[in-house]
Image 1 (tube, rainbow, N blue to C red):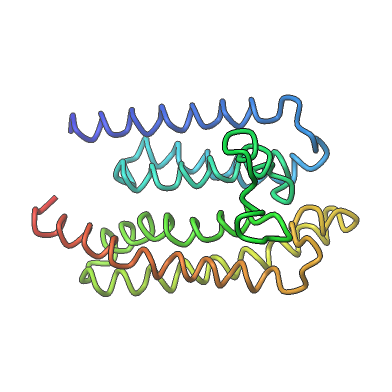
Image 2 (image 1 turned 45 degrees about the horizontal axis):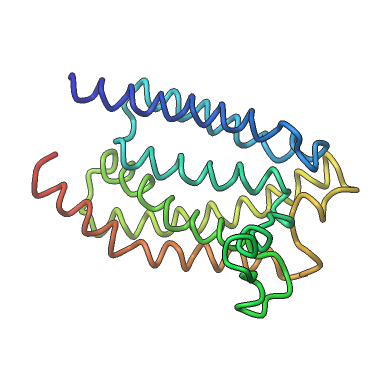
Length: 214
């Protein structure tokens, strides 16, 4: 019980810290009008993570993966994803921009976040499926892959509906399409790739946990 309580305290501390980071990210935001739309899902996610921490739904590693994803989202939301100034940061540190290295013509921060959603999401979803489904690790990983990629597709539909209903004039800005009509499809593919990349890691992690009996 003490181990569970210790893990819960750590998770709650991370949730609170993430809430503070979210609040700080709103200070001097370059796009203040877009922050409410960007962070409506963030507030819901933080509330669910707080409940999860108190009830012990997830282990610390799985919860931490979701927190890391939220950190990535908070950074992206501050700059409405399309304008995260990673080129300015790399130029100030390294003397040249990331876009120059790869010949990019658009801001790809949103692509990174979708890739990470697939990978990080697999850890938490696989743990939940394994703990509650009473199935093998292989079956849990397969179901997790299907669930994560489905969530990715459903979110793209939700994102479109949200902007059309709440703020049609700012749909392009919120969705971060940057003029690409295939943006949603590419985002889903990257989430799928992230999930595939995570399969060996997640399989090894939970097979080791099953052997240890924890």
